[in-house]
Image (cartoon, rainbow, N blue to C red; front, side):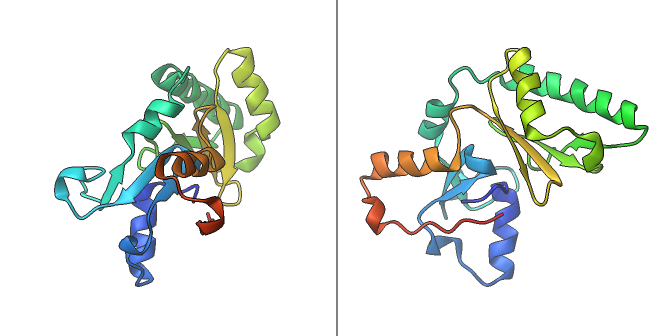
Length: 174
């Protein structure tokens, strides 16, 4: 379970000599993606052919009232406002780590970006439903559906696969 995107964890694991097939599932992007190891090229995550298969049923569980593109457009305007107010790049969208259900930003100036509490309030005022999460020592900011989280993904795996939680080992990290 990690805040990182699948495209980020694959090179980390392989550089450490860890096979992705040693794991049954990966909870990526702060709980907005659930991936399984795959060796079938038809199931690959992206054109870069990462060896993961995305659980589309999990996406159908978390997409309720997810504003996707509308939220992304609002956040891009918000980032532009923060950048112009600080006079330099304070926050920029991280295209490599963003996905359909995780809008990710790189935070370059932490003083220019408000705390999570204030960001949540701003989102609620604009009727945008999402979780706001800082990670990587506040250098990354993820916006995910309100029904997505790492714990919800574990719950989903428990229900879908019927695995007893007492038999489950969860490795958590940035």
